[in-house]
Length: 214
Image (cartoon, rainbow, N blue to C red; front, top):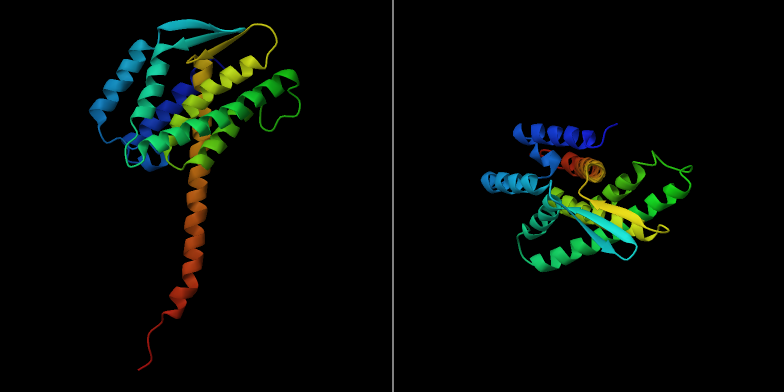
């Protein structure tokens, strides 16, 4: 499958859900649509700009649009204790990225004992962790953006010799969107289970509340 195909397909599905009033399933509620479109347009315009840095034996390729989106996703958080929330999400992203990168390294050495697929297990594990850290779609996407960058660095540092890490490539975005879908599915499953348990617990109380004798 060509790189970027999964990203286009998932983004198209997310756009359809957002446009038809199913934003709760996507987890990305859009309040200020004009500013969101301006930010996305700026990220898309800057995406072709690529810069390469060298961190020891690692050659890190970064795309300007992706870095801008990472900063916007973190700065867009609102509410009380916002700095504590940002710090918490960054710590969660670091933990998820370390596990994600370690899974990639393990499969690059011996891709035999895999769960779903050697290319899917890392993003799926990261998505499950993001769902465990937060149930909000915006927080999950922020965690996964930074976790994806951390995973690239961890995977690169675990390699021997010179390794090239890329933050913002088409393959990288495919992994991010797969992880986000996994996170949303886990969150929706948890919501369904919680609603079912709540309804099951409420049945005995509803039966006890019959009409009073006259």
